[in-house]
Length: 224
Image (cartoon, rainbow, N blue to C red; front, side, top):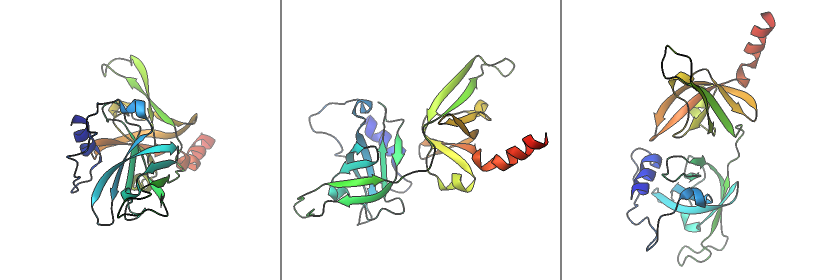
């Protein structure tokens, strides 16, 4: 029940409710999701405009296999959300968007014959994997005691794109004293730690986009 409640807080958009009272394996036992890293949680809006939840599993980095009766009404406008990479307490996870769904050509929704479907992940131009560094300060009057680092994964976010920023989301990230530090992706500085805000039971971290400011940087360095 604890993990189901956690999933509900993390993933349900405001005003939507999932029927989840029977979400459990009958007669089973709990396992650590991290040890079943192929497992995904699929949230979708079906053809009846109902919010539903399904399971699924990764068969390739960019493909998920699930049941055909878990098909959303479309692949547009956020009708699919795919979550994976959970830790033991479902507090950290990754999220992918769906580019195209492939229900079996001979799926029969009356008797569930050929009830199988593939979901293709929407490709991303975001640089990943990434990490951020920051100093551990025990007092504002003393020098830092440690340099800390955490891995982050950049996510697609319309507001961040409008603000010329990169964003990551999750329970791990930066805090106030880390402002100005580097977002490092593939060995290069892609961002500057800027701000964060709570979002849907998680936290959205924003980084100023360094590549977009290259001309400004070069002009300053050239003239000084």
